Image (cartoon, rainbow, N blue to C red; front, side, top):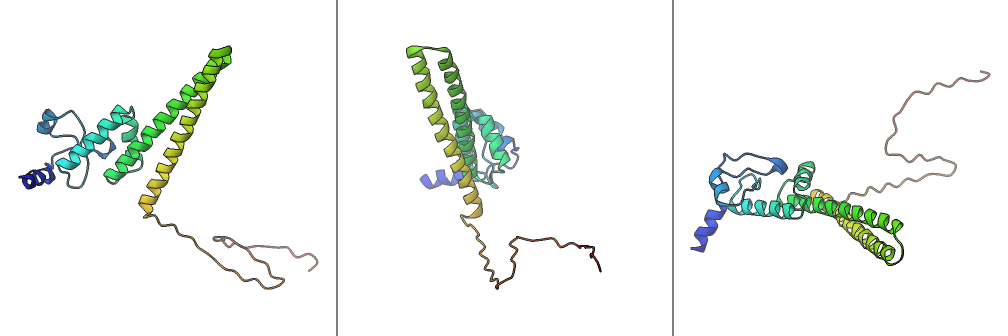
Length: 190
């Protein structure tokens, strides 16, 4: 019985689905009527598991307040699969949260400049808390960008080592490539 359910879940969806923002698929009428209105995952051959995962990703991004930016980020990085879409959504959510923390920090700093005593101290403490949140979130964003680069490059980094031996009295030029050109010098006295 469980095998039949898994087989049904992994069966390809109808081909008549349309692509929308973020490279997602628009649900078919029957599917949309029986579930929350959502956009489905785009895979070469989407199935019900992929569709549910896509809907869940979008619901999570919406609940985090970053749905539009998450879709735009997935489009911008040309997310190739569900893992890259999740990473794009995390990047967008981290960005939204970081910028929100920065705005709150600025508000608290303004409040601190207008206040005295305990109110000033409370505003300074809150501004400092938001600055720490901003630093952690931007660090997470940058780590996510590095993760994307490693995913796409297979974690490989190419280092070229070039050895040049230069004899005494010689000159060395170190450059990636030089374009040759003609030099015309005027001779003096000759």
